[in-house]
Image (cartoon, rainbow, N blue to C red; front, side):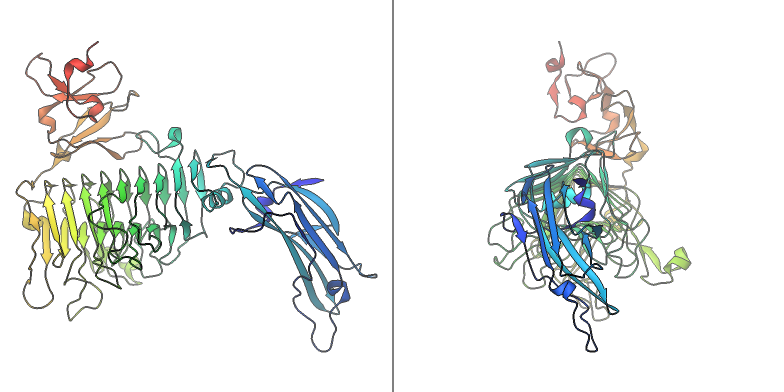
Length: 570
């Protein structure tokens, strides 16, 4: 028997089907029936076709044997047979190791009196995946394995990626149900000295998402997700999304969906778009009293751009509520955006944006027209804001800017560092249904008026009836990039840049050139010393002292709270 890899030669199907052995004798499908009085060829219509796969259910990595046979009427020597598109003898068997649940198609064909005719029969094999599947360079047909595993019937399913680049070009809207994890293996994950595995696409797909998370208890973590638009997307046919979170209809609140430790870039629509589903619950499944149900943290969102709309790192829309914290944003049109409410109800959207770092790049808004590519900076371009919530109404002169009315429900904007100054830092485009709070932020803008703006209800005047609560503990005119330290925070002998913004500490890797969150601390570099205090090789942080005096406390690796120094002594 000749062995062949069914993954390259089969059409993968994701459905539930009978687990009994498939031994099929069917009339099959006949195409291109003769016309003009010519009768169908009995070589096709009267042929007996059989195909089976034994066993019809196999564990992942195991083989099945595909058997087939064709019995023809006398005088039918011109009939040809193909198995999954490959010419084969009229009878035979082959060993196959399918990468996912698959169909095997037996086709016979003949050109009779100038007319082509064919029939097919098929057999199915179900692949049963273990609860944890690792995809690495040794994995055959890794994309097929990825798709098959994510759609498996297991109650819980984890897919680990390690040292792979997976091209999902041509694939879109991969539905993720309950209890699914797509992560990097711990020793292969994105880190201060590694970029992590990559999933990427190169094709534009309108506004479709690559992944659509519809279930609960879902984790995506540790890998890169790269879209097809490295420049600034234009028009509505280039608005692709990396991840769309849109729960199935249910009266039950979402418990936990987490997107963490990822690099998400080159998506001209949204890196992550979060929506809600209010079909069976008035407030949907995501709301401000369950802040962390969707938790987006410790990611790097960059170069998610579009000419005159979209181009968001993260968007909360359609009544969703999202916790967005400890992320780094750079070169996005908006870092964080909001769509005011559900289109079918008064389920309003919102977010908590906490401890994020918004770098100086991005914000460019240009006329969404074909000539942009030819006139670049001479076109109608300006810089918009980075943290946003749209209103649910338009002024009389506009039909799609959503600049007034009710702007979301609750927006908690807390302890963020905004180094971007080309446009506003924050704009709330209406009156929140509940509140918008800006608390403990650090802004490079010179003043509150340069950094924060709000619209109100539509019409003449500002019509602001629920103003943003801008707390007095916000700091303006701060430039933490002007004062950087240097130390090895990851114990490999390489010096990292250290930035203390006044609310958070960050380290910049010399390998990835990406900032990573260390801690929520208010001390600035002038108040600190960076040194190795305990017995490991990792840099620690302590309060600055005068002379040789030892500090009485320190932060281990810069990531722990203050702990007494004696804890570190032998």
